[in-house]
Structure formats: C-alpha cells, structure tokens
Length: 302
Ligand code: DON
Image 1: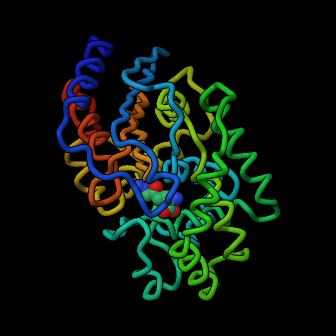
Image 2: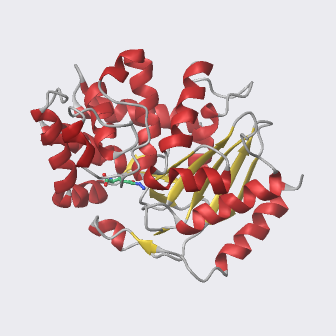
C-alpha cells in the first residue's frame, strides 16, 4: 500500500473542497485562524511517518488534550475515576449542561467538557496547576518523542476571559459535590491544557501509544489503551460520534481547533487538521479526509 501517494491525493482533494465549515468563534483567539489550513500525518506500526500539507504548523489541540489527561488520570487513580464520571455517549453538544442536574453532577463521559473538567480536577488532587500542566507536557513530549510542545498563553487567556459555560459546568458540579477544587482553579488548568499547541505530525506521533503495537512507546497498559479507544469511538465526537463511527469506522478524538486524532489499532496513529468545523464542532474537512483514508486503506475496527 502506497501511503505517501494516498496522502498526497487526499491533500489535493481537500485543497479543492468547496465547503470547509466554520472556524470556532466562541474563543476569540481561535476565530483568527484561517479555515484554509490543511494537514494530515500518519505514523505506522512499522515506525514510518507520512505527511501532507502544513504538517509542521502548530495548532491548538483543544479537546484532543482530554485523551491525554484521561490517560494520566487512569494511570494515577485507576478505576476509581469512574465513580465521578461515566462512560456513556451524551448525545448532546460538548458543552451542554442539561444532563448534570438529573444525573447528580456525574458527567456522562470524560470527553464532554463537564467530564473533562472532572478528569482535570481529579489529577489536580495534591498538586498545583503548574505541576499538572508540567506532567501533561512531559507525557506529550515523551509520547511524541520530541520536546517542542508548548502552551499558547494567549489562547488560554482568551478562553479564560470567555469561558462562562465551563465555569457554569464546574460550579454546578461543585454544588453537587463532584469537584474537589475551586471552579476557577480547575477551569484555569483545563483552559491551559486545551491551549497546548502541537503540529499535526507531533500529534500523530504522540498518538502512537494508543495503537497497542509492539516497539512503540508504552505509556499505559494494553487494557487501558483498549478502553480509551472504546471511549474515543463512542464519545470522541460528542453528538457526532455515531456519524464519525459510521463514516470512518475508527476511534477518534476531535478538538475545536480543527484537529482530530484517529487510531487504527495495531496499524497506525493518524492526525488531521483543518480549522473549519461542522455543526457538532468537529473538523469538517478533517472528517472527510480520514473517511477517505479509511476507505483507501481498508483500515477499520469493524
Ligand atoms: O472547553 C472548550 O469549549 C474548549 N476548550 C474545548 C472544546 C472542544 O475542543 C470541543 N471539541 N470539538
């Protein structure tokens, strides 16, 4: 299979795509990003890396950070984490508050914003925000095998200034006894984790530990890796998760910066970036590109 040729073809097709979606505008710093960017990268189980487009340009990973904080939380707390957050798709927007009141402040899953706030709150226990963010950056740098991965402070400040929904979610969970720290502290840490920037190539490399293939960085046991993949498949695209599974057939996690990390278990880690989003807040062209890649390669968990 000629992955380089497949990627080049998909890159050309995406440059010509008429509908690129809409860039996220509720975080002012993200609204300034052009919808014209496109990049895709594949790291195979054999250790090869293929890229197309602007694969070296850093972008805001946003909710893709939730995969890595979940990995840290499971490593630190194990299954105890599941007393505070569920494992079911929510069928609602990523920032919805609707289910929390009926469900005792226990978010449906670790990838919606409420669930990710609980995960960050859990890894903050006994640590300062700076230490948690340092640990997260170390994890990402080790997983990617390179050091040039940082937090964009302007993006974090921009979200902090406009993050009323996340603060509302955190306050609501605090009222229901499911937050250990002040909402401002947990949200502040979360805004900074979302503001981490990585290139598409770095993100694909950092995703290799989720491939469960021999010879790759082993950051987590095989059973936990399988479970994170299951959650990515069922919840990684929020109320667009069913559609992503139908079209792509692989576990994926999106972010409002326009990135998606996709895992073909045992075969490859894939990252794609195109900032225009669809109605569910997931990359419009990114989804189309991985759909075409899955079709061309035959990669699927089904
Ligand atoms: O909390 C937020 O709204 C953003 N920092 C992250 C949301 C996000 O990436 C949703 N994903 N597509």
